[in-house]
Length: 193
Ligand SMILES: [Zn+2]
Image (cartoon, rainbow, N blue to C red; front, side, top):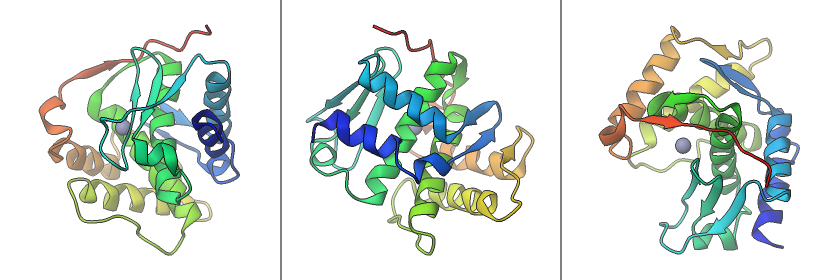
């Protein structure tokens, strides 16, 4: 199976279809990921293996509409944690499609919630994260996803929400994002080629 096919399969699977919520202006919904899958089919979004990326990582480049994955991810993409990471990156593609400039931290919040909602749906009784620089982010995002998924759970987080504030704080403190916390991401749309 090609890399594109593996990624499309994840974006169109029945778990991704159930990932939906609103987070301070970003709308995430299952069918949105199908639009991202179609953009991959039409090559408006490119998927590439990047041998320089550390194992287990992926990256969406908004300037060139490209989803890069590590060599190890390109080979695998069978575990729920890998699939959830693809959903994280595809959430940035959804933000790109909406073509609205967002602060870096604000843009990461819905991506982490989507990743955790996927994992909560795929493995309801596990917390599949290892200790590392991201662990605080995952604890909070996983809790948010868990609350949203409860029957009747509120799936809208406003800017004023306490949970969202604590998620933003955890992302700002993470060494990966801290040096860039004031950066803006100029999402500029995904044109058809
Ligand atoms: Zn991200």
